[in-house]
Length: 590
Image (cartoon, rainbow, N blue to C red):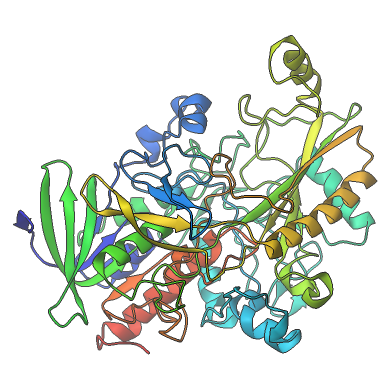
């Protein structure tokens, strides 16, 4: 029972990161009274990201200053259904953001569009190779929306962020220097590509020599001064090398702070509350609509009921799923029977890389941005014969670096002592003579990889923690091993003095101690069939039509790319459906 009830709002938004900021702006522009509830602290460029404090690698890179603390918010993890899950007590594998801006504070800015075949992956495989190549237990699905439908919203999101890049396909015309394998786009990127570093140029030259198609990696790091549609201004990137895990001190990396929030906070019909954790979405007596949310006000210690006509779930993907399970919106997924939907199709990301060491080449690793580099898409999902290669999936490959910080980004060759005088000598010798080539690949969804409520562990409010059941599967390991052969072939053509590779191999187990990516997806997936999806193609709950669920929890399986591009496009797609259809006649849109 709530301690108090606050005045009703037209819209309540749960979480004030990328999607919450965009939905807040779009609905506030229509004159609705909008309230956002954020579980963490308030954050802004000043004072939170100002120089020199924010470039403290120990505080933010190692001690996770902008990440959620497991003592306040965590989950339990296990490899298989017969294992006992244990709490994720120390951040490692993934790093959910904390406070206003969420993970949009500490991301790198790598902004991709999905390939058109990824949005209809099950149909594409069935039509091209036959459904019998899909391994037993793999649960890939179509998204329920096409690239053609999303394209205007991709374009708008890229222009919101001021993405720097080179188009490869404008309205079907292949553009030299861009990605020839991307789906047709209506316009070029709003800003030209970032300048390449020496290692990226070397990789691009080697790839071209082998007949591949290098292009600059698209970056939400502004290559020049830029103003977006909301009047928010970004400054040109200064290549400081402090992107991932840090807020941007230069107003150059796109974030909710630099792209939306400054304008949104000036809207008189928008308000937000921090340190306000939503505990449950409350439902009407018939269960067909939500009446609002109950949240915990950390400042007063009270539970508060916030009534609203429209509830937008815009938290981090894992928290979206947890809240739906706690609120009993949608049937929980049961892997034994295959029935239910909430928690279904959790997936992650498959990464790996090769380090190259050159005695006669000098790099400046401290000069970098979070999305700098030259990429190839020649081994992407649309370019691989799955029947021939024996796996489903794909990857983009990039040469370059994002920085040269002394703790996390100092690499020494194989055989170097891990400490002492020998390590110091190797670090001094090789710090600016090393480059890397990395693979960033897809991860398919499986019947026994899912999210549910833990039967044992509870959070500080007495609610069950969410439990993750996940492990690597042979299909995805075959994919990354395929990429290993392609990367090492390119690397060997560059004649390094030494090479060192790190890829998941047969029998690799998911390890939460090692950072891999904060690209957790699925669990509240979108689609056109309520038997296999939590939300419809407009991201609207099948069960409660005035609840919309944003973010990467909607992805039926993970793409080969970083998730922020489609996350933003889907936010604008849903906002369009809400503003132009739902609000005129509130109802299920499908």
